[in-house]
Amino acid sequence: MPTSNDMRKILDIQDKNIVFEDNCVEYTRFKGRKCKMIKGRLTYIPQECIKCQIPNEQYTVYANGTQISRITLPMSGMHPTYLVLKKQRFKCKNCGASFTAKTPVVKENCFISNYVKAQILDKSSTAQSIKDISVQTCVSSSTAQRMMNEQAKRYQSTDTWLPKHLSFDEFKYAKGTLAFEYIDAKEGKILDILPSRDSRTIKNHFISCYSLKSRSIVETITVDMNAGYVNLIPTLFPNAKIIIDRFHIVQLINRSLNRTRITIMNRLHTSDGEDMKKTVG
Image (cartoon, rainbow, N blue to C red):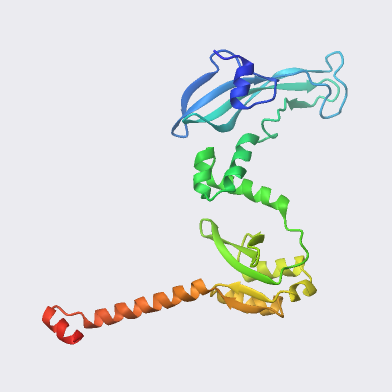
């Protein structure tokens, strides 16, 4: 069987305080799927009490039982992989507080490893649905979405000036929910993404993030045929001209032609083929 050092390398775990013993891997079923459970033990001698910061001298802080956590790891092989980690519990003689051993593999009070979180963010940079990402990382769709949202908050737009040419659009990012994005129409760069496309959210965002002077610089805004955008733009961008995206114009014309064609065909349709020929002629 592999040693603790080998298991840490296989799982990309850098924490040497996690120890793996022989026969630590077993296959079982969890949430209706066959999965891989890897048993490990986390223990060390703390330097001080994390509550009162008293140095651990003469066993001031001593071992006091264990706590088992099931931590989601990146999928290993063909099966979902979990680390069943037995964490050492400690107690302080000075203040009477208890605490659990910590590891950089996972945040405190969390059961999804930092490796899985990094994997979710990495996959979100490619053209994949949230459902596909959640299946590949063995977490729920809501969990994957929440992690993306938390990370996105760390990278809010800091620009105070807008380009002369903007483009508004929306996209579906969750079931029944459309997000709003505005883009530098010339460079094709996404400037920011809002969680909703309703007029109040858009208006509050632009008023709070950009001054009237900055918004007055905008000369054109390209949009689809969303009436909400058309009504909102003059209020926020007094000098901007509205440009309807030609793709949506062509799409509207195509739909109108198809409806007209179907209406005429239905009008000429009869059960008698000869009558149809005469009508068409």
